[in-house]
Length: 328
Image (cartoon, rainbow, N blue to C red):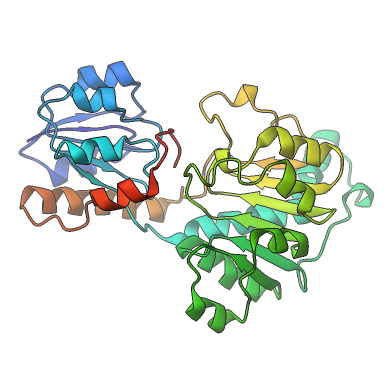
């Protein structure tokens, strides 16, 4: 079988060992649309990551394509509905360890609450050892508002409980077992924003969640509160967030995602001293990357043997109407 892999992250030898009798085209980085069409010519399978978008044009240009595998939980970067309607299986990694992203979200929260980045820079770059400018905020007893209580949101709740935080949550699909286990209420989004000292986002990007946190939502948040986003950049109206940070209404924002990750120089949040921003590394640990590639190999083997059971169903794609932006 002829297969193409982008963003191989140093796993080329592992892939060659897994598929010794196949023709593999391996790329360490992402491929743009035209480049992907050219390099994937004749391939039955392509396996990509979050920075290789697979558009309708790409799909229509590859008549031999039978499966698209994305090694990510999100598949916003895949024209998945179009592919499935053409009889092409689309698979992803439903869970490579939700605790990994939750740990990073809490890392961002701690960095914001304790002025970690600014304090580090003051000591190392300015050679000052003065605690005066860096008074922090305790987390114990504070209210954490969790927007989205799927696997990652649930892990965030478990971590926060260990810090003695109080939990409130919003989700269209409420997990009553989780709420009972951790003794928290589900609220409307507006009530959650009003009550929370910290708001953390764990939602997919859909038409209904794009710019969910905009001017109105930010005005509803507590003065001096913190926003954490490790989900999708477009869930937040970044111009509105910059205004809320500059005005002091929000104390800080911890972000692992931004609107246009391909052109961060244009992002309105980059220049704010009230933000802690990391380059989409919430998923990125040695352990999780190994799990992701192991899952990809297992999925491809199942596809080749005719035993693939976890492809994304067309009914689900029609229901959620996902965007096709290159986001995780």
